[in-house]
Image (cartoon, rainbow, N blue to C red; front, side):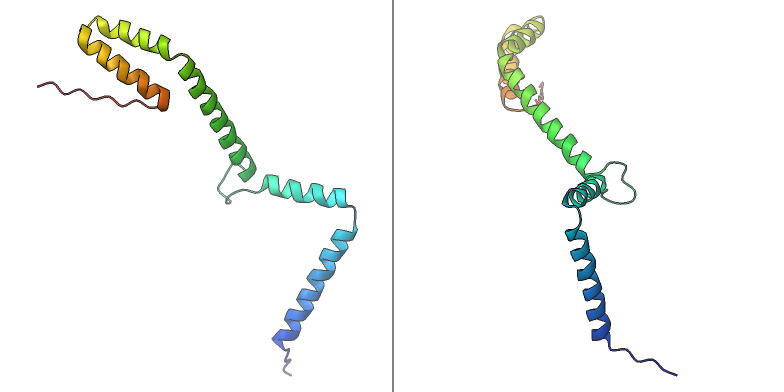
Length: 122
């Protein structure tokens, strides 16, 4: 005995079942549905190896960005104090060189978190 089923009929039956399940879910308590969807979205992980959820990754990124912006603003406010501290530290070595390096470091800190310095002595 051979059972022949048209794939289009199977597909149509599955789609009808899915539509019925969605309609049933949507006619229930909207608050419960929203809570379920939110819980699922907030607990979704990138993959099975991830410890952190996608939501917590995004929140942590946003917090780090806000902290970086705040720190950047604070650094800009402290520009003169930073320059004075760097100048004081470098003046012990050599006057002209110290002021040039201090100016470069202070201007670099005003625009970036990283300051790259290199010194070539011939």
